[in-house]
Each structure stands twice: as C-alpha cells, then as structure tokens.
Length: 200
Image 1: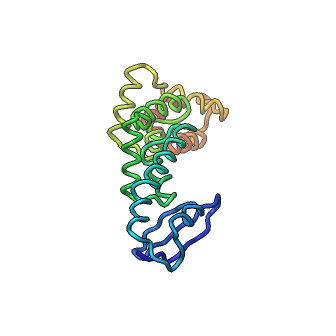
Image 2: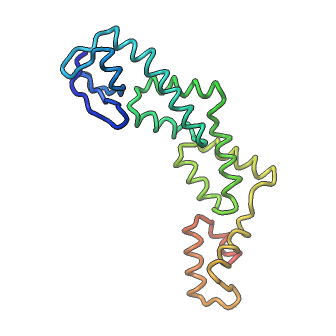
Image 3: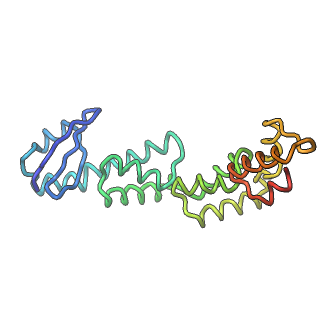
C-alpha cells in the first residue's frame, strides 16, 4: 500500500492517507520508527503492527480516558474514535473492550440523565436529548419506566407551574393572548398539550 499524503496535526500527530483512501493517525516518532514517508510504500509488517498492536491499544486507552472524565453513550464514544481516524474494526474492538470492563452502559447513562433532568425538562425533551446522544429508544423507555417506578421522576405539571412562575404568569388574570403565548412557550419546551391545558 502506498502512502499518498501525510498531514501534520496538533500534538505531534500525523494523519496518513493510504492509496486505498483509508486514513490512520500516528505520532511523528512512529512514522520514523516504521519508516513511513509520503510517496513511500507501507509494507505488510508495518501495516499489521499498526492495525493489531498500536491502534487497538490507543483506541482502548482513548475510550477509557474519555470515560474517566464524564459518562458517555456508546454513540458518543464511537464518534470520538471516528473523529480520531480509527478504522471501524478497531472502534468495534475498543467498544467491546470497554463494555466487557463494564465502563460503558447506555441504560445507566439514560437513567442518571432522566433522574437529573426530569426536574428541569419535559420528558419529550429528555427523550429527544437522549436520542440525539445515540441512546436506543427501547433503552430510554426502560430507563424512564424504572425511574418512574422508583418514584424519582419529577411531576411535569409541577415543572410547568415553576416555569410559569418564573415568567410571572398569573393564570387567573391572564388574557386569552397571554394564555396562547404561554401555551406556545411550553409546547416549545416539549410538554404535551393535554398537560399544558390543565396547567394554563
């Protein structure tokens, strides 16, 4: 395989484009050690070492370091590793590794997220946020059900009342226009119209 391009990246890293248009990122010292240069051939021995030793270890370490700082979903870890130019099979290996170590748990992430944000956001908004973070719908539904069963899910009507108070809304003296404006605001926050109508 031919090295068609080497691009300098921050932190002493180099992005290598190969003749099959794949990308790998290595450190400058590794390029020197493996005798990799633009226009040169990447021999099978060097390529195998990169793919079976260097990158798998680095991907696992990168994923673990990310999870040390804060929780991530599987989708978010995949995105971080993809952004780092790790090949798909190396990403899969890293994901399996951290799952085996019980460091990656979308259900646990969803449950914690729901418990924390249910006093601040509507269930629909929380669900949308979790879907955006790559959590599967069935995992979200299970986490929601379990949080509700444990009594840790905040009441949406209480949340709506707090939001109305924050906006100095008085339902007894509100005009029709004020009510419509408040309904639109709350709907935009993700609350369903039945709950909004009961509160406004």
